[in-house]
Length: 318
Image 1: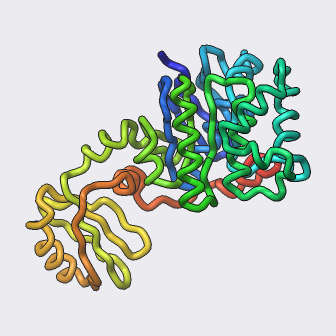
Image 2 (image 1 turned 90 degrees about the vertical axis):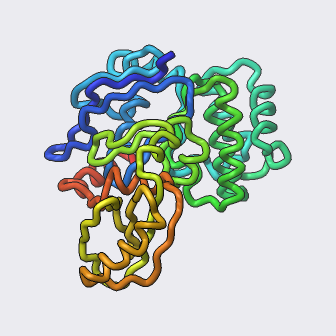
Image 3 (image 1 turned 135 degrees about the vertical axis):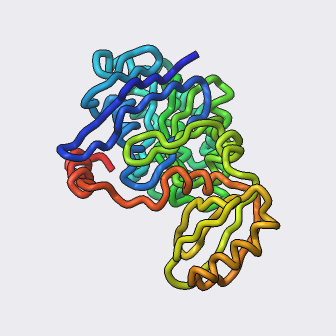
């Protein structure tokens, strides 16, 4: 069953094409949209949640067109933005009550108590949200998002800024949501989270999908082994038969090879011969980070991105 469908979905801001002819078909799953800053992640989410209109193309959520039926789309979705949006001057229960009344929930007290219990906030329900930790506030936002039992939940960087324990806790609750048949559409910069929890991921670069599939499928498309090289100074490119350059970031270079053990000494000689200063080399299996680097390469913010950011800030969108 297709829950989210986009065809040629495009958004332009003056000379900047933030999302370029996006085609996606998403069912009842956890779908992760990954990409560097300025790649089009948040713009895509804003269009799918009807907070931003597309320049061209179509998008539907739960069978409803985002342009012609925005109210019906909003009835079946929830959106938890990257910036925490709880009212810190209200208690957890009062925050929940605001959402319950907005959605016209019958017997709001029972629903609120149920969700606060699910999110393990019952004992702090009547405390001001300003006294909550970051993880507790994020759990409160998830509870608010579930108050009207949506079919789709959009999460923009749901665990950003949280410690490891809080991130794990949040993901436990997200997985519980999917067991109830919800579709989760999320963005994240944490490759380990996408690898572990997402059924499928799409990697977006300069507004286009550069890779799409399950984490296992995407990793299997790389050659068998990954050689990671830590260097000093500038990288001087090399070419070596049997080894494929993946990408470089912060003084670390990655290559893939069919037989990493055989490639290690050959790579060391080739790098040295090209004038590179190698500090260390290691061998491991491919990760989603390697897929990401191969898909997007060394990216820079696209031309016009500063104007785009100003536009989004002007409209309260980050």
